[in-house]
Image (cartoon, rainbow, N blue to C red; front, side, top):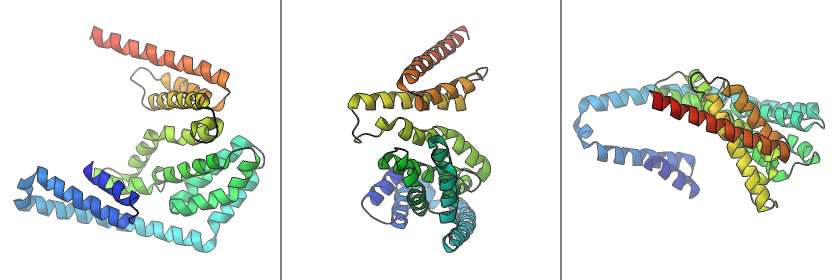
Length: 281
């Protein structure tokens, strides 16, 4: 946690990502050996450390090199801009189709490009079409930014998962799939920015509308998370949870309030059932 806090503080202070990474490694080194000073004189531990670092670094160098080739091809050929323009033409004047195509474009371009260039391409090409449909500019930018970041864990590229897999000692693709499963609520929240616009504070909505939107999205996030990891014998929570979550976000306030009450009821009875099972065992 100290190393992570050091990285965040360093980057917020305006330093480069490379320097922030160096600070994080230095803090991890210092505090790690402060907890386990006996490892300083353990030759076997140092050999194991050097070997594991070498193997992980070699894998990361190959992955980053391959991604660099993809990024170079996209930048030189202008495929990203052409792809975004094509999707913008397909969407036309349909809100949900425009959002889905924009999400797909963000994920695909984000797999082969850094977040910032992918974000700029999508916003510049597809952003005006959403604004014509009445989506505020701030909400459009947040929608694109979210999916641009989520592309780091989306298969098949999933650069963050490929970087994390050697550290965790797992395979890259199962790691990416599990990361996507854990982050499934994050794939829905950008749509909430559009269909529950009061969710973004400071955008001109009354505080009661913002509280209502926060409640709906919070319940939807909980229901999606429970649907992703249902308890044994509770597989019905998958369609029920996902259905109620969609009703909370994509429909009007009346339907959303009904779904909220139903969702709270489902979670209450599920919790009650779990408590009874613990008492009987």
